Image (cartoon, rainbow, N blue to C red; front, side, top):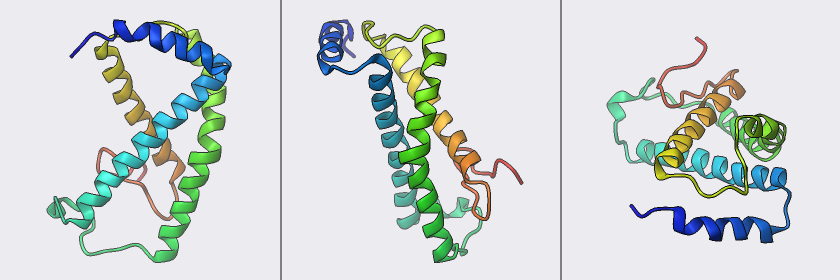
Length: 148
């Protein structure tokens, strides 16, 4: 893998020319990352389900939730994605800056980026588990409900 140091000047120039405050840039960037991770991960799971890959590992084989429940879950998920998540990210900005994050710093090493993507994936999974408690439980990465 090539070094990201050569892209740092381009990154800093891009952020400076965006005209956005650090908080607005953080909210937009984090929301886009969350959106891509969440829907990409779930598209992969949906593809596995439709193609019957790993069907022997289904938690309740042969059972399908009621269509109304599926639509209700989809509406709740979209509300969480487009309303809840941006608000949450907005208020988490001071926490990230407290721990040393800066929008205008050079791009970090690949190992840090990969670590942070894994943390983002786990955080997204936990957030939607807690957000989906009710009639339908999201099973997420670990394959079992958070609350039994």
